[in-house]
Length: 123
Image (cartoon, rainbow, N blue to C red; front, side):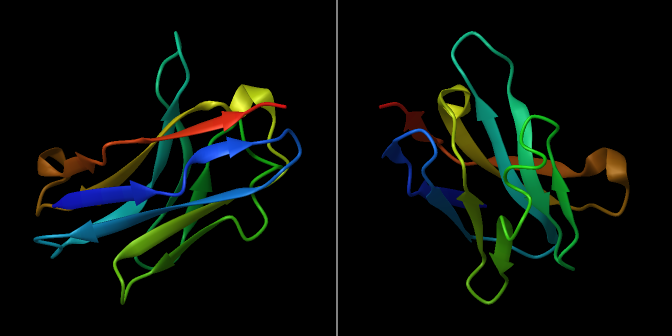
């Protein structure tokens, strides 16, 4: 499974940005897709994820700001989108796309990562 992220860049505080992640390769049993982020000197944290069925989950650091129509998925294109609104400087990070391939037993589930895309929020 290969994950290609795009759409990062520089945005002013209060602005919006959309990042995309396209999956390719052996996509059978791919279920959850989404985004983590990692700021300098900090641990990687969940931003948002979405299952094949459309169930979403948002990280505590972005709840309330990213929640409305934020993460979406086009299963036909194997692509997940993250719309980020009301961005703050503390949202500056490398955003990593991920995808989970389910195994018959959860302990054998496999997580794939994209190369990351840098989002910088600055005036």
